[in-house]
Length: 168
Image (tube, rainbow, N blue to C red; front, side, top):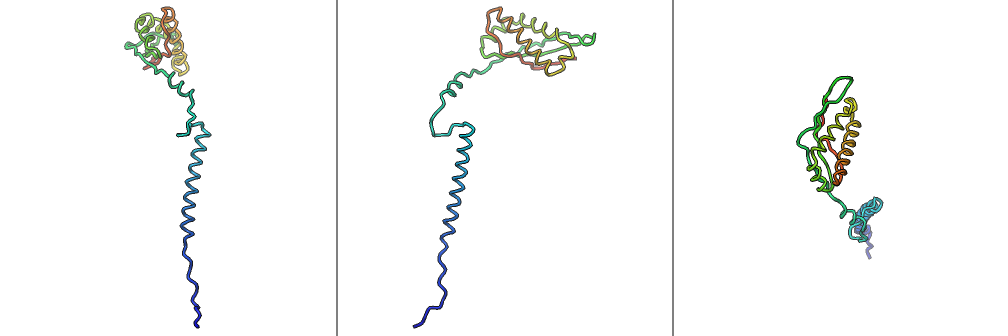
């Protein structure tokens, strides 16, 4: 009898394919878990898991967009600087969350322009050249306008905005 001295046949390499598939599944699982963990940590709601927050629905219902009105004519007045007379020019816009406030502002515009020019004219030239000074001016203008509207029984404005501001 002849013995088979040939080396045994190499087994088929099915293990590499299983290893590649297993590695791909592990990577996909790790990425998915990291995304879910990040969303949970940041407080985002996970899609498809319900548990909707009713407070967020109320907040979106409560949002009212602002409306604006633009003053066509600039406010121009003189300001004092080191004993010299300087000029300030401001183009303004009003912001309100209530359209009735803008209608009232339009109706009382002569009164409002007079108050705004007084506030602008009371400023010092050096103060108007700084961002903080201009912000303080806008705040004081808003206060003056809202005081005038309140005296007339009208709703207040939210902000006075500078469209253009020049001092020279």
